Image 1: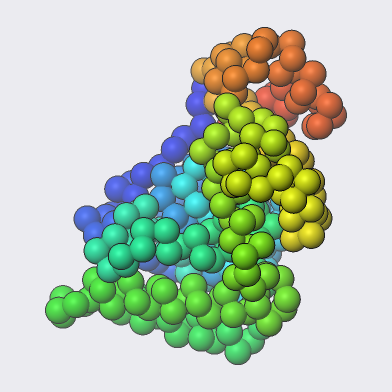
Image 2: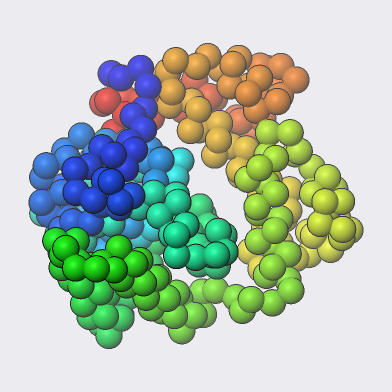
Length: 295
């Protein structure tokens, strides 16, 4: 049993590592990186499109099916594992946080895509045949550029990757799974962004409402309308997610985790965790760190 969940950097992979991107065929990748089937984290963005294979995968402790024409996206820091029932294949792309820095003026451009939200349910998408064919074409073009020495290949790969994001986003729009970029949607994104920065310090909706210059009732109604959850629930879910990510690091005691998340004491943290997860932090840790952290 490992004492700490592994965190992989883009330089772990040979291809493209100096350009901040790794592109490959998933079948080969899966066979040659068996250790990545167990729970691990990335310090980079990650996406996989399956063309064959079945099984299960976990993203931040939530289970999803693996099947053809399914694409998933992950942001840095999320916990991930696979459990394949039949041999998988498809395409994989890993790219660094600053990969688009030389091309895009807007450093937060990726935030426009809900599959980079860090919310697992929004990150796993099944595409229809037409979109699947477009994605396969784009993946193949990206692979070709990866072995090219022609001028502008780096920027061409970036633009191909952006096309892939846009086609996938349009699939979600057609299925009615995302909302238009309205004022309410912008407010929600700002709320989620503030939580990501402040979840350990600010745990009450009224604190975030003040930062957004709206009332707590407005914030709560917004969250219920767009996500079907209260603003308090969204804050709690982020705190619990970070608790889970820290608990599978066996180098940290429960008391240290409680302090990291700014709880007044260990007992309060344990009660909080048990109330919403129906298990204690220690039982969660034991269950999720067995078999070398594999879920």
